[in-house]
Image (cartoon, rainbow, N blue to C red; front, side, top):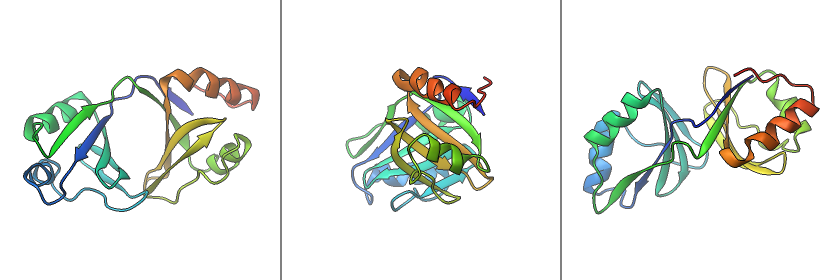
Length: 162
């Protein structure tokens, strides 16, 4: 397991799926946004995850990918990018240990299938879990709750390197 503090993250707010900004955004990412509860899309620039009918989160591979997206799809009346960098920390887990670990953290239902995400509570704090197609699990936790979650992991004897 590893920890990445202040992860790069942006919320893509598309207020009109058939509007100009949505079209610009699709061209910028080279495809469609994920549609439907829990759907994620892996792409060259990073990972997109569906958060709601008008919101998709973007986990860019690096700062350049986020800057490029913002340049190619500038904010408009029908959509915008809201930077969330610094608001969340990221735990990376091998999916093989995740079901048992999540269950011990009180979140047995927070284990999505590969290629999907789920939202819920972990160690009694809100969390978003992304199960990448490669088998890696990404757990996004509000940065204010990271110490609490790491305390629970230490209690469960799970090492966090990072």
